[in-house]
Image (cartoon, rainbow, N blue to C red; front, side, top):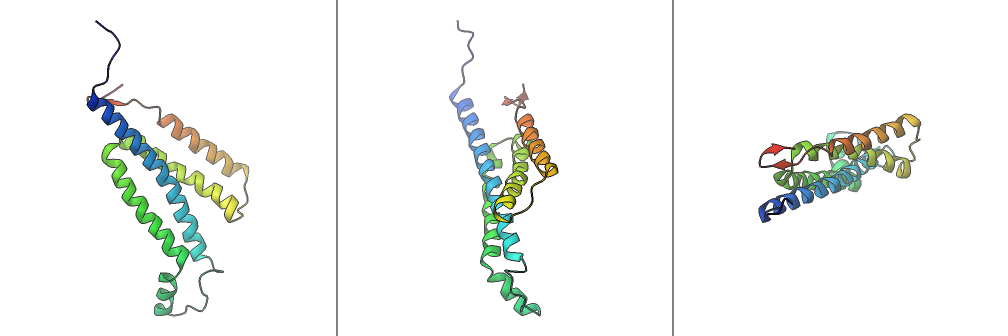
Length: 147
Protein backbone atom coordinates (compact mmCIF):
# COMPACT_ATOMS: atom_id res chain seq x y z
CA UNK A 1 0.00 0.00 0.00
CA UNK A 2 1.47 3.32 -1.04
CA UNK A 3 1.44 6.34 1.26
CA UNK A 4 2.09 8.71 -1.61
CA UNK A 5 -1.08 10.65 -2.34
CA UNK A 6 -2.29 10.42 -5.88
CA UNK A 7 -4.37 12.98 -7.66
CA UNK A 8 -7.43 11.80 -9.44
CA UNK A 9 -7.94 13.06 -12.98
CA UNK A 10 -10.65 15.45 -11.74
CA UNK A 11 -8.29 16.93 -9.10
CA UNK A 12 -5.58 17.29 -11.69
CA UNK A 13 -8.02 18.92 -14.09
CA UNK A 14 -9.22 21.34 -11.40
CA UNK A 15 -5.64 22.27 -10.50
CA UNK A 16 -4.90 22.88 -14.15
CA UNK A 17 -7.97 25.09 -14.48
CA UNK A 18 -6.92 27.12 -11.41
CA UNK A 19 -3.43 27.55 -12.85
CA UNK A 20 -4.90 28.67 -16.18
CA UNK A 21 -7.09 31.16 -14.29
CA UNK A 22 -4.04 32.62 -12.53
CA UNK A 23 -2.23 33.01 -15.85
CA UNK A 24 -5.25 34.75 -17.38
CA UNK A 25 -5.49 37.15 -14.44
CA UNK A 26 -1.74 37.87 -14.66
CA UNK A 27 -2.20 38.70 -18.36
CA UNK A 28 -5.16 40.88 -17.36
CA UNK A 29 -2.88 42.97 -15.17
CA UNK A 30 -0.80 43.87 -18.20
CA UNK A 31 -3.91 44.51 -20.28
CA UNK A 32 -5.31 46.75 -17.54
CA UNK A 33 -2.05 48.69 -17.33
CA UNK A 34 -1.96 49.20 -21.10
CA UNK A 35 -5.59 50.38 -20.95
CA UNK A 36 -4.74 52.97 -18.31
CA UNK A 37 -1.74 54.27 -20.22
CA UNK A 38 -3.77 54.53 -23.45
CA UNK A 39 -6.56 56.40 -21.65
CA UNK A 40 -4.01 58.78 -20.12
CA UNK A 41 -2.47 59.44 -23.54
CA UNK A 42 -5.87 59.85 -25.16
CA UNK A 43 -7.00 62.39 -22.56
CA UNK A 44 -3.78 64.42 -22.44
CA UNK A 45 -4.17 68.09 -23.42
CA UNK A 46 -1.64 67.62 -26.24
CA UNK A 47 -3.70 64.82 -27.75
CA UNK A 48 -7.34 65.73 -27.26
CA UNK A 49 -8.29 68.52 -29.62
CA UNK A 50 -8.55 71.80 -27.71
CA UNK A 51 -11.01 73.03 -30.34
CA UNK A 52 -13.62 70.58 -29.03
CA UNK A 53 -15.89 73.18 -27.43
CA UNK A 54 -19.52 72.27 -26.92
CA UNK A 55 -21.05 68.89 -26.25
CA UNK A 56 -21.28 67.50 -29.80
CA UNK A 57 -17.70 68.40 -30.84
CA UNK A 58 -16.41 67.06 -27.53
CA UNK A 59 -18.25 63.74 -27.93
CA UNK A 60 -16.98 63.43 -31.53
CA UNK A 61 -13.44 64.18 -30.38
CA UNK A 62 -13.70 61.51 -27.67
CA UNK A 63 -15.15 58.74 -29.85
CA UNK A 64 -12.57 59.36 -32.58
CA UNK A 65 -9.63 59.48 -30.17
CA UNK A 66 -7.80 56.26 -31.07
CA UNK A 67 -5.76 55.82 -27.85
CA UNK A 68 -8.82 56.56 -25.72
CA UNK A 69 -11.04 54.10 -27.60
CA UNK A 70 -8.25 51.50 -27.61
CA UNK A 71 -7.84 51.94 -23.85
CA UNK A 72 -11.51 51.31 -23.20
CA UNK A 73 -11.44 48.36 -25.62
CA UNK A 74 -8.58 46.91 -23.55
CA UNK A 75 -10.73 47.34 -20.44
CA UNK A 76 -13.53 45.46 -22.23
CA UNK A 77 -11.16 42.58 -23.01
CA UNK A 78 -9.90 42.73 -19.43
CA UNK A 79 -13.46 42.31 -18.14
CA UNK A 80 -14.23 39.36 -20.42
CA UNK A 81 -10.96 37.62 -19.52
CA UNK A 82 -11.59 38.19 -15.80
CA UNK A 83 -15.03 36.61 -16.07
CA UNK A 84 -13.49 33.56 -17.72
CA UNK A 85 -10.70 33.36 -15.13
CA UNK A 86 -13.04 33.70 -12.16
CA UNK A 87 -15.18 30.80 -13.37
CA UNK A 88 -12.47 28.28 -12.44
CA UNK A 89 -10.20 30.02 -9.94
CA UNK A 90 -10.43 30.98 -6.30
CA UNK A 91 -11.30 34.64 -5.89
CA UNK A 92 -9.13 34.95 -2.77
CA UNK A 93 -6.08 33.83 -4.77
CA UNK A 94 -6.84 35.60 -8.05
CA UNK A 95 -7.94 39.01 -6.86
CA UNK A 96 -4.63 39.95 -5.19
CA UNK A 97 -2.88 39.34 -8.51
CA UNK A 98 -4.85 42.27 -9.94
CA UNK A 99 -2.83 44.54 -7.63
CA UNK A 100 0.10 43.94 -9.98
CA UNK A 101 -1.68 46.30 -12.38
CA UNK A 102 -0.40 49.16 -10.19
CA UNK A 103 3.14 47.88 -10.63
CA UNK A 104 2.88 47.73 -14.43
CA UNK A 105 1.20 51.17 -14.64
CA UNK A 106 3.96 52.72 -12.57
CA UNK A 107 6.74 51.08 -14.58
CA UNK A 108 5.09 51.96 -17.91
CA UNK A 109 4.60 55.52 -16.67
CA UNK A 110 8.31 55.77 -15.91
CA UNK A 111 9.18 54.45 -19.36
CA UNK A 112 6.52 55.85 -21.69
CA UNK A 113 5.23 58.96 -19.93
CA UNK A 114 8.58 59.95 -18.40
CA UNK A 115 7.13 60.07 -14.88
CA UNK A 116 9.77 60.68 -12.24
CA UNK A 117 10.61 57.65 -10.11
CA UNK A 118 11.12 58.15 -6.38
CA UNK A 119 11.72 55.90 -3.45
CA UNK A 120 8.10 56.14 -2.25
CA UNK A 121 6.77 54.78 -5.55
CA UNK A 122 9.44 52.10 -5.68
CA UNK A 123 8.76 51.08 -2.05
CA UNK A 124 5.07 50.83 -2.95
CA UNK A 125 5.88 48.60 -5.92
CA UNK A 126 8.02 46.35 -3.72
CA UNK A 127 5.25 46.18 -1.09
CA UNK A 128 2.64 45.20 -3.68
CA UNK A 129 4.83 42.49 -5.18
CA UNK A 130 5.64 41.12 -1.73
CA UNK A 131 1.97 41.22 -0.71
CA UNK A 132 0.86 39.38 -3.83
CA UNK A 133 3.55 36.76 -3.26
CA UNK A 134 2.48 36.26 0.37
CA UNK A 135 -1.22 36.08 -0.48
CA UNK A 136 -0.45 33.62 -3.28
CA UNK A 137 1.00 31.19 -0.75
CA UNK A 138 -2.45 30.43 0.75
CA UNK A 139 -3.75 26.87 0.84
CA UNK A 140 -5.41 25.19 -2.12
CA UNK A 141 -8.96 23.88 -2.09
CA UNK A 142 -9.24 20.19 -1.47
CA UNK A 143 -12.74 18.89 -1.32
CA UNK A 144 -13.99 22.27 -0.14
CA UNK A 145 -11.46 22.46 2.71
CA UNK A 146 -8.36 24.63 3.07
CA UNK A 147 -4.96 23.23 3.93
